[in-house]
Amino acid sequence: MPEKHSLEFLTKKLLSTYRNIHPPQHSTFPALTAEISDLQLHPTLEVALHIANSDLPSAHFLVRHMQAPPAVEGMLLHGILHRAEGDFDNARAWMGDVRDTCEGFVPKHKDEGKKLDLETFSKVGMQGETRSLVSFVYGELGGDPLRLVDDVEKLRKNKSGDEEALDKAIRKEMEMVLDWCKRKFGEGKWEDARDAWVRNSEEISEISNKMTSGGEGHRKF
Image 1 (cartoon, rainbow, N blue to C red):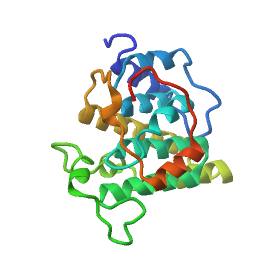
Image 2 (cartoon, rainbow, N blue to C red):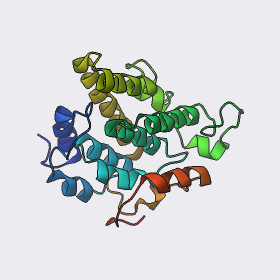
Image 3 (cartoon, rainbow, N blue to C red):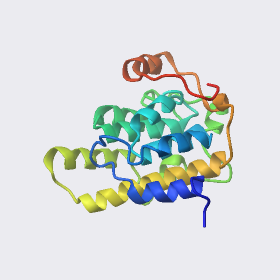
Image 4 (cartoon, rainbow, N blue to C red):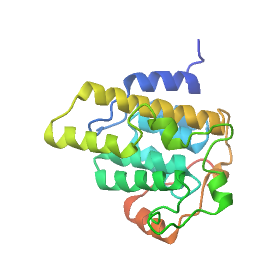
């Protein structure tokens, strides 16, 4: 039996209650916010657990530090977060950037054929895994992260679609994101999280400044 409030315990507990088709009004388990942070996991795992707990403010504070290649996991989580908030245009923008990055292109510049430098692209994938993050997470979900954005928007605005099936798909998405991040970054402590951060491009920094706010964290940023 997993130790209480271990990563394994929290993953099982939060995935079993994860419901983000409709905008969450508050975290599912408020007392777990501190428990999640105290594990000092890789920031992508911490963000994923906060989102699974419907604690979007805590997730947003962290994810804003991971908004450019090679931090493709943070970019994807940013899109998932905006989808949960109902900000579908920003969700599509972030997930489109993830798709570009996984294909080796500079986000928003795929049409120009502008490629990522080799050093950056080498950090986008996972050692020993031939699939990209997009293929790994969405391979059983139609292959395209934008499809879930469309489906959630349609359900919220038009009350059309299979809510039970969509609920299952969203849970599967988060399960696969967590699985990828555990494999790539490990399940141990990252007391100094600065290695996980990337410098934003000027374009992304401008967007970030408009969309995010937050206080101080307890780890080094």
